[in-house]
Image (cartoon, rainbow, N blue to C red):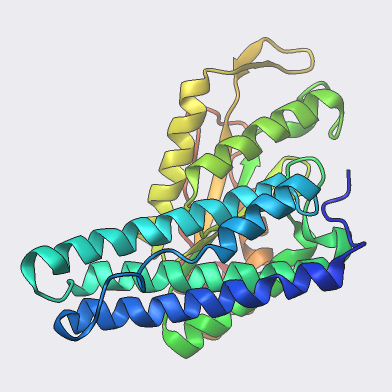
Length: 306
């Protein structure tokens, strides 16, 4: 099944306009209420706009968008309004403005919701390139462009993010043939675990041959490790054993490599360095489900000099 249908692309794109307009006005009203509650009426302005819900139902019925995309946007929308409601409750109960950390979390959710709506417009124009048909994750063809946009946001706004690669250990040995039905089974399984391990506004991609990429927004290296730890726990709970070619059964495991980009990094180079580090890791060790390796520019320079 193709990721998207395009018979009514123009109408589909038109449907985004009220979503962005309505939510922009809602967010403006919300900010007024959070910081100037005495001067702002809450009778109807802070009600969630209905345009997104109508759009979500419509595209689900018409099957014009992959279910994974709708689920991601719905999760982000739910998180946004839950966070907004919680902040409103605090303001209504105390009369005080919200704390900076909670307010920044709200800003992040709103920015990511708008970002994903606009990016879906771009994906429509990219036709089938946007999503991997096996896993439902974003395809590797979209990764460099997406990471480049995050690098721009890092340079412009100072918003950190992490980039990680995760590899199914010994993928080539599973049933002996990468891309086989057996390989696809574990690929889909890990893709599902990744989806429930990352936040609603993070991105995940399927590269090839059991390798995944994760773009973890608004996260430093510590937050990135936490995301991978969630994935590790999800995999552990599955208790999956795999029979490798000519070998006894062993637990299914993954190895990971993570970096926190800095201003001036280039998306292609980041991916190359991550891939190189992951390839140079100890391929025979499966004692742990996930192995973390933080990239240090200074250490990498020293290694290259040696």
